[in-house]
Each structure stands twice: as C-alpha cells, then as structure tokens.
Length: 96
Image (cartoon, rainbow, N blue to C red; front, top):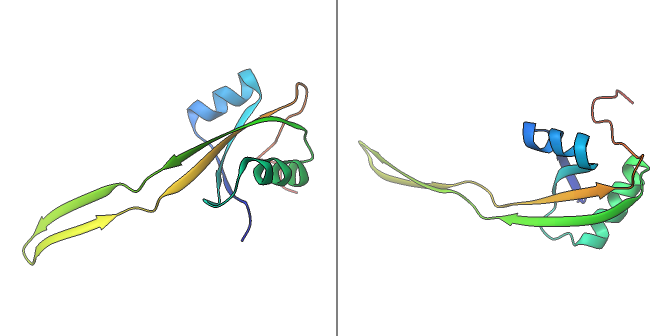
C-alpha cells in the first residue's frame, strides 16, 4: 500500500500552497510523519521542512426509512499538511 493516496485540492489548501508553500495530502492511516516526508520527497522531488498530520474519524448518519432505521458511516481518513522549502513547488496539474 502506498503512503500517499491523493492530493487535497480545495480552495483553502490551494491558497495555503500559494502563500506558505504548504500542500495537503490524504495519506495511509498507518503512515507516520517520517514515511510521509520520504514519500513526498521521492514522488515530487522537493525538500520537505515540516509535516503536520490530522486524523479524522468517520461521520455517522442515521436514516429513517419505510423498512426501518438505517445506520451508516463514512471511512476514517488521515490528512497530512506538508511544508516544502522556499522556492520548491509541487505542480498537481502537470501531465507527466
């Protein structure tokens, strides 16, 4: 299983990448900060200064239907905010 699952491309993260050189990724829930740093450096060829991680638990929902009460939940996810060195950029939109 790969450490990096997908990049986060939202308004908030895009603004943070333009102003502070920070990029967001959805990562494997078992990955630690050292593994995330090595994976980003190997994949994108940048030098990483700092890694911040966040664990988000599942969202639980209940629906009341004709057949009874339906319980469900989304998957838990781990996000990482990676700060790269000054002058380095990650281009998610280039077709390599």
